[in-house]
Length: 115
Image (cartoon, rainbow, N blue to C red; front, side):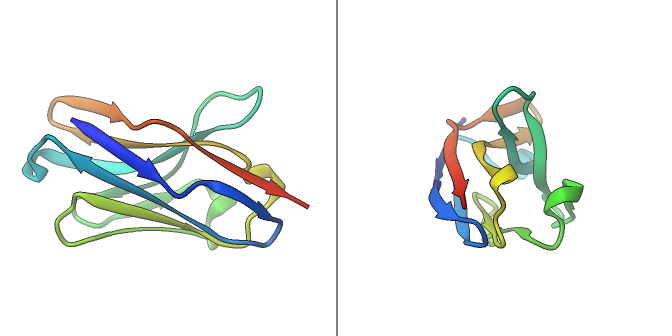
């Protein structure tokens, strides 16, 4: 299973970024959950947003109303639209997939929000 992530970058406070994560090497019939976690400096990795294979979404409280997770009909690609970004959103974002064989991680992508 491979997860290809993209879309990080640097923006100013209030700006937007969209992260993308595409899965390959597995059958989407085994997908249970996809999403993103992030790791900020000095903190443990934390869940930011997730979406089940039935389309049920969940968000970290601090990003509710600003971040939206969505995906294509195939289930192989997920996007995280991040609006109204704040300095505290800065970190390395990791997409993940939970399927019947366990949890799989993509490489991290850096998001930097500056004032």
